[in-house]
Length: 147
Image (cartoon, rainbow, N blue to C red; front, top):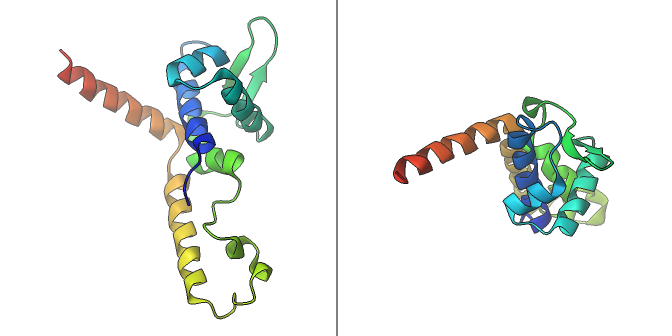
């Protein structure tokens, strides 16, 4: 499965939100878009999808923006990707066995099932909190070499 731009941007936006929410209660969409170099209009659509899936809360009004709907340690990367990408199956027959007449004897389908499980296990093992820690460590290393 190739992750779309939408999935990559959703992960980056959620990471940005988790990092900056500690500093500000509500994070402005335009600030996330600027820091992540994502079109505001495109990001707004992604954030709306994340809100519909219960991952972020949209705060309306003059000082509106977004905040996480749960604590960073409660949000898994798999939830973010599934919210914006849908199924993580590399082929249709995994989610819908009736879509193919070969399902009962297809060896390659067994392989695709394993691929889906492996991918899901990686994405499901990573929380936003883990991503924040990884980002902070990367910034420390980068700053060490930029003295």
